[in-house]
Length: 337
Image (cartoon, rainbow, N blue to C red; front, side, top):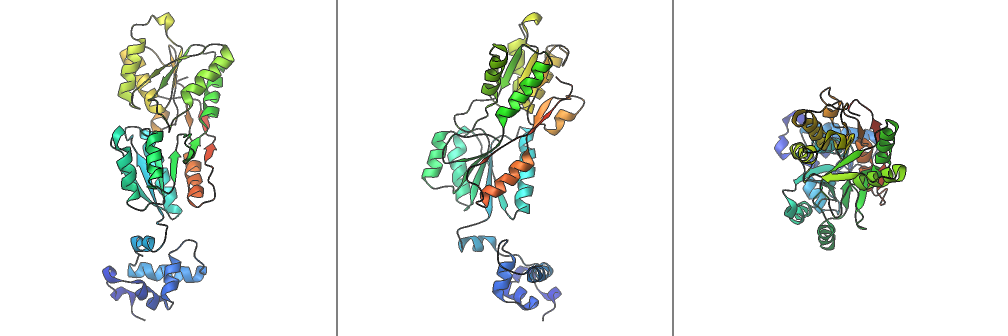
């Protein structure tokens, strides 16, 4: 057997690995397939020799020979929201552990959704995971009708489109838990701070909060919208809404659709309006991004079950579920409310 240290890693083939390991070329191929029939001893031996030789199979060639690439496109349009980075880290790590590669597609603006989906499909991905807001039914219909994507999965939002799969936190249960906490703390005049409305992939937080609060108190809370999930834009929206308002007419709590809005809200209350949080106005967020636990914000929020959602994505990719998952998260009580 040739000494592995004398192989040129740039030209090593499966045949070289097979010869060095004393197995067939097909055994080498099976060793690199997660579900292939091969003994643990043989797999370990082949992979050890392959590592010595610096060999790795050509995934593109393998995908061309089958209908599966083991590649997932992660499509995102909102890098200003720190929670998206948390999602990307968790998803890419758990997907890699499960034997799936990832392709990151940055959707540039509202009009870029069709071309972004096309970009993903041209790379023969097995599924496209949407982690963004700029999608509506017409874009989804076009993509599915042209068979540009095999599976279209809406992640961390919900979609009513029948040909998509939703993997999301249970927003409705989460919002009811936040509302119950606020009612227990005797807050009675909330204002909901929402992000942009979308036609298909959406959050149910504003509508759920308004309906549940009305059910519990007989009063439907007002809401304001911020055009993007952006803390600076949230600052301006709050200053515009509350700036000319008499103190007695102000809400006693601002319920925010996510943490990045809540951070802007807290900054606006403290540094533009001269108010104290929570003494004058309380604030809640949603997502539990790392910054919310800092003493600067000490934010009451709701933690999405990102790890469990990522593990559920693996089940969808492996064909173990076609129904999607709506999963419970965890309420986090801190000092902002």
